[in-house]
Length: 242
Image (tube, helix red, strand yellow):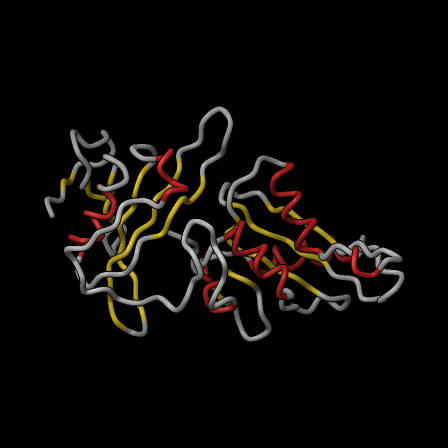
């Protein structure tokens, strides 16, 4: 599950973006931009815009930030702040919204003047090779039709963990989940695929079992229960049958 607006230190994130902005190279536009992102392991990575006399070759601050993310260990972005020369929040351009989707996913939070926004709201129809074009989330009633992983994810079948959890879509409580890749020698942890939304937990659990034997259910109060195959991990004492 991604962070909530209240769990992100937006003051610190915006301050880091402002510090990066002061190192921008913007002699042509005279419009310095800084970006700071919160990675899933707690790192803050930053970037600034770097312009070029061939204007189209300029690099946005978000590009430098994502390079910093991977140069310092990789992982997913949980929250991002982009600021102008006065330290005020800026909306990422279209190219950078796609970039943030690729490296943060639909639940990545983006700082905005009226309050942070999810990438799923900023980029309603993002292109994603794993998920295809994304649209507003729908609640599925076809509980008997649980698709397996797409062709690009077959190599991960049986690996990682699926977390099934509650959510709210258009004011309606739903069950959904995400498939998380475990870290190993040559790649870091990260989200492989996000589940559709269902009115009941059972199809979300079945979706998880179609991907891995490790399925953990997170209830609304944060309690964990085991819905996977075999014995649960020692830290999870409850077992969920559906």
